[in-house]
Image (tube, rainbow, N blue to C red; front, top):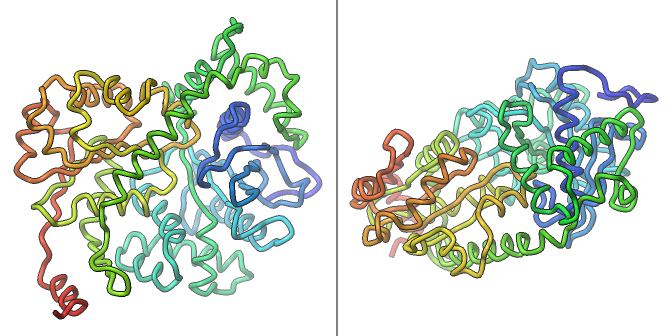
Length: 459
């Protein structure tokens, strides 16, 4: 993908988008934030046009540190790429990825990542492309991964595109299922809307700068952002890099006081910890120990995934015991492992204000500001369990305020579980917009599923 001996950015239309993404990563470096796609890994360096370090993936590299060590994240920014076998940009990206992936002197398959950034994913890409990477990561063997993908034609078609493009990158030699699976475990795709009018992602970053700005600074958030953007532009032609040490003397750096962010980062950790405790007792399998068995409910899961991608508010319903909460938990863990997910019990919203909901958990920051602190992580999801518990709540309670918040923040998605009898009552009680709410019903087990369970548990 790169022309050795030159680190100048080629092309035109995507250059501005590339620099905006690089500016977002550099801002995250300044506030000592975490990178996407790797759990709890703090950004430590941004290096631009890294062909001078021996890489084929040439837009930029982010280095991050976590408890498991150092991670290198190779990033290719393509604002209008199409993930098809005949798309030349996609083939160039995968060819570069494949070369870097197999260069063990500069890439660690157990820790490093290969990421494509696009200005916006299509619904099909969200539903079926991202799933390939998440499923590859969350399946223990290539056989399990391939079996699950093959259940869904559109995902299988996506996988076959990778087979075809990787064959070409691999000297026209087919990859084995294991080679394909192991490669996809290292790949991910992110979307940011920086090129859009009224960009949501830019708004989050401007708010992040506002929250972390020194009290002595009189410079506006936009001026600080523009200053970082201008600095990125100077790094690009020379294949430059930035660390906290190298930029601490820059004018834009002086406007930041990261101590201002401490309560927000603590709030994020508190909500994540509380979310784990709510999810922990929800079982996604039947039986215990050696007899533990997971029943795949592919059709229901695909319907939920599609609606979660297409709608801001998705309610999963069904009779007691059909596995509503279990299905949502599995989706969040397997299909959204890198998203910002906060989990609540429905009765927690039986408060007069959203502020009271959070303060009762020891959090005094707003959800908007909390999400701003993790701006680099694009997917923001709230899971509310057992919505039927709000039937006794005041119609003007905090849940009503949360619904109003959705209208102001279309990037935040809510998924909730509820028993079937309560759906219409909840809609009426809280004046929910029927057109903006997706309802997915999980059926009871069919004969085929019952037979599978009875074979596993004959007693």
